[in-house]
Image 1: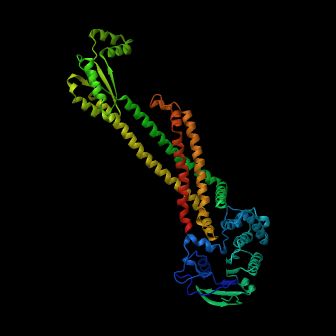
Image 2 (image 1 turned 90 degrees about the vertical axis):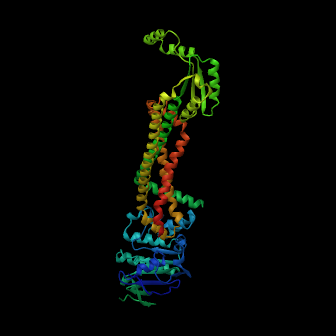
Image 3 (image 1 turned 30 degrees about the vertical axis):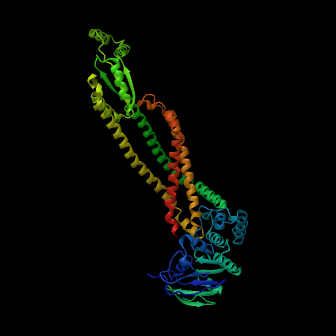
Length: 212
Length: 302
């Protein structure tokens, strides 16, 4: 079975691109391939002119440090507090303790979690967890944010909070690739939309709308 | 480098504390393996002490004919002590043998009466021979049988005691070999149990490890805290095992005299303290680190 086939597009920086499609259309597979979590059987994916699937597994962390990822199921570290979850990415990159403290506090206040810094993920609501995940994806100022259904588990109020946050990130100069099947979100954004159907690109519009 | 090391230690320690239940369970499993290796460590030392004691008790006595002169016996003694296998040769004259017998049995009227009945000194001059190794008695006995003074020899008691000596060494050999095989099997099983326990503990973190990879952590940054946890588990288990061994050595100090009079568990513990510490650390920390390395390997492939 083929998840996506004959997909070809280019994303400039900074750009806000939404990848839409029904469940199973191949949105997540596409994002996982950009992150080199999965390999294509044919074709190539370039990030900053580098073929991501030619990078050795032991060196993949260098690519992934340029990308911030927001997962639908958050993927927060359950044994680490909100602060530690966000700080982990900076620690991985070798930042100093003072820098980490200042940056993490700042990003937590941007996402409105300054009072939840010492709480563990299980003590946060769905919206708070997703905001913590976004803070973790942003903290090291990556050039690209991959957001896979970041509003999938959220109510309408929290959904638009998260989308507002992603727009803010984009306006600060970061490329955002958002995978979603939320019609209202796409129509409200008024940005580039790539529509996938059965693993194929059926539309790629500059100011697209959700049409399936 | 120092920052990385500091963070490895920090995350390893935090994870150890936040998963205390699992950490304690792992410590006890590692502790059991250390106990097992400690048991075999002492089993080896005790069996060697017992074997050495038995070997020390084995000797060969060559009895000379009653008319053999002291010079003849001393010439034979010189000849025997030249043999490379021989550790010591002690001459016992007829008179000394009689004196020894009287001293030993002076309170036994039956024995003394029997001695009086015989009238004359019934004892023979003899040479008591001790070799370096028990297996050398046979060679020495054969060489004596071919010597020039052979016609002055009345008897060599090795041939009378040979079946008993052979049996003792066969039994000791079997116990040693059996103990070694049983030990290997038990330690092998114990290592598998530890590997599995740590594998299960790390399997709980497999999603976390995958996420660490996806947010840009290098393999060593991920591996480090797990290895540190393995070291902490191993060190605590080693310290506990050492303290318990010390307590047992002190508490059951005299129990070993059942096997060997004069053998003290506490002395054995003190004599082998550094080797014991080395083996316990090797088992505890080695197992902790090795198991973590093996267990985490499969989750680093994302």
